Image 1 (cartoon, protein in one colour):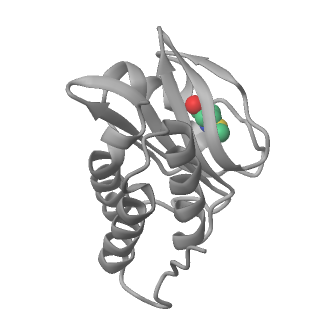
Image 2 (cartoon, helix red, strand yellow):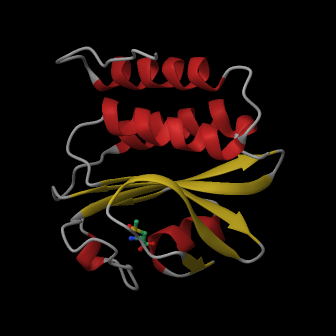
Image 3 (cartoon, rainbow, N blue to C red):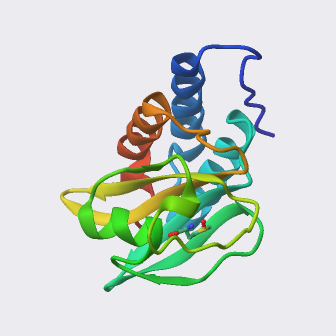
Length: 162
Ligand code: SME
């Protein structure tokens, strides 16, 4: 049994450090990328409050394909350049969207989503996936969240590919 739990009321920096350590521990020695994405999505869900979707899209060819996640069923294929996820994939840059309704081309998988954070996962210079977080709260994510998920992506990117 795994028993990782976030410390109640801890500052974001501490939550992201603990999340990263839990993700490294749970993926340690496991080479199956899908299993690792599934456990990391579950950890993100457990550690971060006020999310309605948390998970992965995998970069396959010139599109993103749905990977392990927690939340409502979501659109399966997103071409690079489309929506928030496709923009992160095409540009290689984190997308911090405080109001999804103001983002041109936002793809609404869950009508409850109000803000979104998408971080590319790059391994050896190659995009392998994006981490996508949605929240029902407007402006749920800030620069600290972006940095926390970017640090998570670089810590665990190498165990997501097989
Ligand atoms: N909103 C995303 C689509 C994926 S869902 O949020 C799970 C987008 O615009 O790319």
